[in-house]
Image (tube, rainbow, N blue to C red; front, side, top):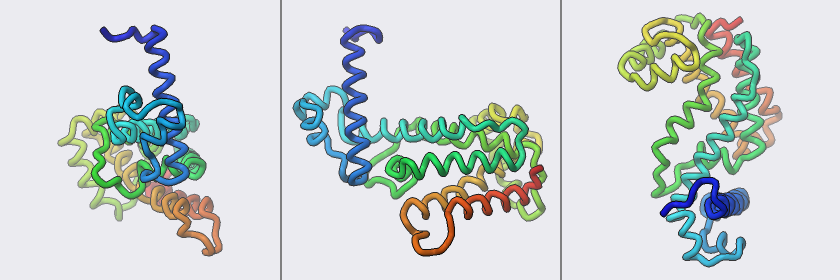
Amino acid sequence: MTARADSPRARYREQTRSEIKEVAVRQLAAGGVEGVALLRIAKEIGTSGPALYRYFASRDDLLAELVIDAYQGAAAAVHAVNTEGGGRAALHALTSAYRVWAVAQPHLYLLIQGTPVAGFTAPAETVLKARSVLGPFLSVFTEGRPLASVDPLLTQLRVWLREEPEVAAWVEQWTGQDADGFAAANALTGAVMTWPQMHGTVSLEITGQFTGMGHDPATLLNVQTALLADTFQLP
């Protein structure tokens, strides 16, 4: 018999799972993915190794939940941004919010955007969680008028919208635009172009690649965001 969600047993189980994840996140921060060890977690929370497996079937099971939690944290950061009015101001606010989240929690950022963990397969819902992070960026580009240089990518993504109902539904959710319209394709293209530019800068900053280069990574991201806004002629 499964314990009711509001029963003392269920609450204890969720409390213990949360405690396990908190310890795992500390291990992740201290030593990366390789530093996450179930036996050490069990010792820290005062239980046995076998008992820990009642809460997480394996280390990969635990990592999967940390991945989902990380995406949810990133989504919360960008969803908190007021994008009313859209335009370049909203785009700057979104990229800045994402960078602030990533720099504050580099271990979680690298868990979802760093080098893939050998032998680990991310849960299927990861795609939906990643789309949730990128969703607010779609609305920013709805009124964009991309320059002709963007046409090759725009053409490919317009086809993707027509052929992938899930993608079309995701774009419509955030933009209110039908997949066959130009606004939906513009929005998707802008969001897709933002993703690698933003991550490129953030990843290099977090891994220390800008050390000694004489610039503030936040300034670099701001300039890159402005160029992207210019490319889509955002107001």
